[in-house]
Length: 86
Image (tube, rainbow, N blue to C red; front, side, top):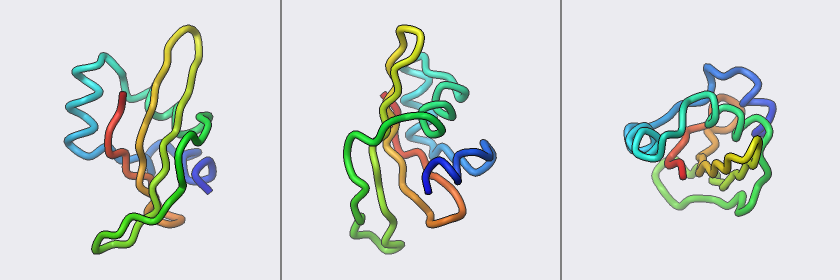
């Protein structure tokens, strides 16, 4: 499901915290998109107990000597919300 949603990069949304962390860590949007599209799940998916009841997963991608990890919440079948990047 994550890969299906991530095919359309417009459905990958970075919250302000993720934008701030990616800038601090010199990770660009393309790297985040690729992590969501081709990354491996390292943790989860598990249900977050918040008002929206979203599922969360941690994705990891290693390519061309670069390692990127994204924590995403899945707004089921519509979009991925990137919570943080490292």
